[in-house]
Structures are given as C-alpha cells and as structure tokens.
Image 1 (cartoon, rainbow, N blue to C red):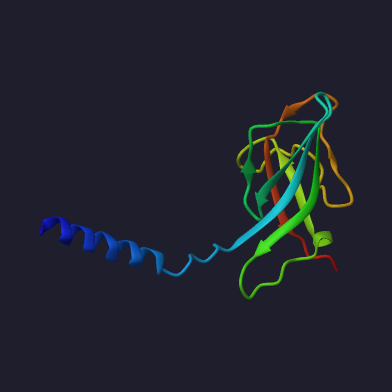
Image 2 (image 1 turned 180 degrees about the vertical axis):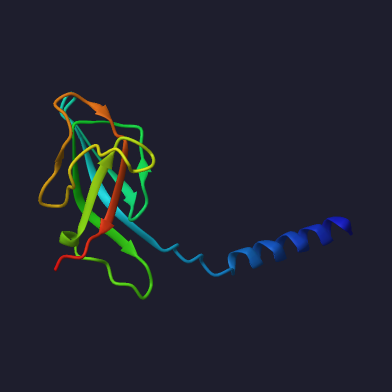
Length: 127
C-alpha cells in the first residue's frame, strides 16, 4: 500500500514538474569584446555587461568591440557605432589603461601582453 502511494505521488510530482512553463530569459545587455594576444596569436571573444566595470583573467595586447547582445523587453538595442569601451588599470575606473575604443577603432594596449585590467562599455550619445 505504501509503495502504491509513493509511486502515485512520484508520478504526480513528475507530471507537475514537466507542466511548468519555461523560465523567461533574464534581460541582458552585453558588448562582445575580442581579446587579442599577439604574443601567442590568440583571439578570445568575451561578453562584457554594458555600463558595468568588468575584469577578466586574460593577457591582452589589443581589445576590439565586435558586437552587441541586447535582450531587454521594450528597449531597443543601441547602434554598435554608438557604444564605446575603455580599459582601466584599477577596479574603480580611475587609472586609464587605454584610450576609448569602439567597433571601428581598437585599443592598442601594448606590444607585450599585459593583464586585462578592467573594462567599461557604455552607450555614448553622439550629437
């Protein structure tokens, strides 16, 4: 009798779990940056959240803004040409580590690989 009750409960629980609606995708807004390390001839695409100072564990010689991934209901994605990024040497965004870079102009960091540092990408209004 207990086995039948347990089996019935397990089947009911399993069917309830499969009938749940799928989870909604969380809103995201990311810049896709290409990390270039010319010393080992490597390229690694990474996602950087827009408007959030971000660090990663990579050695870099150059950074390039490649594309945007924006999925926020009711908000249009900015144009790729309206987004700029900048590398910093510290987590506070005080010590500049590069000039601004964008889709058309990469940041040439160093001839020798250096730490990724911190990068901030954001939508910049252009008049």
